[in-house]
Amino acid sequence: MKKRIVAMVMAGVMACAAAGCGSSSGSAPAGTQAADAQDAQAAGGNGGQTVKIICPYGVGGTADAIARKYALVANNHSDYNFIVENMTGGDGFQAANWYTDQDPSTTDLLVYGFGVAYRHDLGKAYQTEVVDFDRSDIYPVADVDDRTWILYAKTGVTLAEILEKSKNGGVKMSGGNPLSDPHLALGSLLAIEGGRVMTVPYDGGAAQKKGLTDGEVDVFVGTTQAALEDVEAGTITPILAFSETGFEGFKGPQGAIAVPGIAGDDMAPELDASKDYTGSILPAGGYIAVRAGADQAWIDEIVEISKAVWADPEYADWIGEIMLNKNELYDADAKAFLEEGCAKAIAAFELLSGQQ
Image (cartoon, rainbow, N blue to C red; front, side):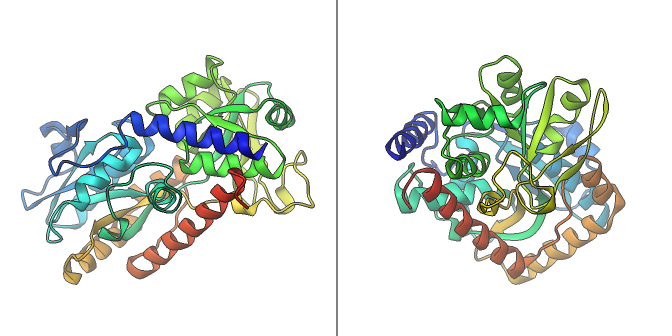
């Protein structure tokens, strides 16, 4: 079984690399979408210096929505004109490649996701994919996106059925590329259960959900924000939260849905209470980051702007409305939290690939 899991992981990674997880050319990556004038105006441009926030994911996804909300609110608390520019490709790698080629003096900011850092470390340590950038060239300044991953299934499908299927042929999941943080979370949990999972890559949350509803995959691992409307409509159902506590806030056609966690008093009864699944709880979401080597005065300024953004109900309340978590971390604390997450990601990979 271990050999089969490793083969599936590596085959998926090879497919990812072939799809464009390649090197940077030093110019803006393919798939660049600059925020247009209307978007910049909506962000409340101050007429001062323009600061671009580079979002490595497409328009309409959770990371993009957070970047645009951050820019909107940050413009009310600074003299800068923050705008968002989308640079897609390689599930975040293209933007990271491009950003690390910039001079440390750049004022461009990067939406820097945990998943990109995880895949970087796995690529360097296990050659799971080509990594043409060094993440030490990216410095996380402020945590602006903290997520609880949710396992979704088609309405009527239970966690017990998914666990059983994972042990008898395996399950297919959507939610990022192979070795994305959703894959590491679910894959490591199923490995503890003696099951396996294969990731089917899709471009964006909408396509990932459609893969589930169309029956192309068995489960979707995504954010709370990504599936709020679908759960309310009864199209899909949240069946597990990758959290030490249960998750509340979802509403379906029949009312409130309490989603069990993977540890503690709220652990899903289908899981084995004698086993420790907490290694599958990986930090998720991302930061506003600067180019490593940036002037400390610029770092301090972004910290203060980010604190003001979090203190503004327009941002903090909105984060609560889409059921993401408030987790304020800045500068050295933000960096330390990232390193802790990367260590957990390595352990999760070693578990799901059978290398322990």
